[in-house]
Length: 133
Figure 1 (cartoon, rainbow, N blue to C red):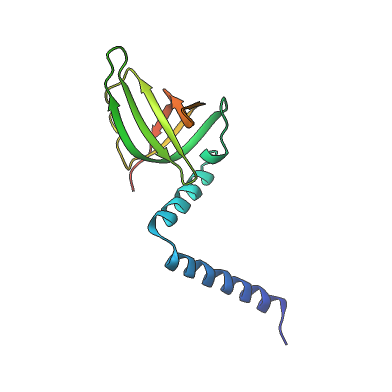
Figure 2: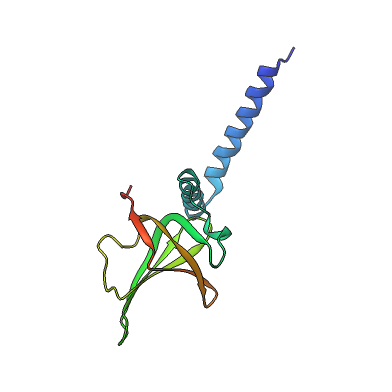
C-alpha cells in the first residue's frame, strides 16, 4: 500500500533524475547561463531580458568583453554584461581604463537603461565588483 510520503519521495526522485540528465545533456554555456540567472535572482536583480528602455535597473552578471574606444573628443570604455538572459552594454564616458573591469569579472550594476542601435545600454552605471570565483 503506497502512502503520501512514498508518492512525494517518488516525485523528488524523478526531479533529481531529470536534473541529473539535464546536466549531462546541456552544453557548458547553457549551464553557465542558468547559474548566472540563479545568482541574479538570489540577489534581487532584474533579468536583462525583462528590462525596458527608461527603467532604472539593477543587474548582476559577468563581463564578457571590455573594449576601449579612443575618440578625439570623448574616449569611452565599453563592456558587455551577460546575466544569463541577455546582453547589456555598459559604457563609461571619458574613461580609458577602470581597475577591475576585465573580461570574466562578476559585477553588479545599477542605472537607467537606454537603447542604442537596438542594443540595451547603461551609461556611466554605478557598479560593484564581485570577487571572482
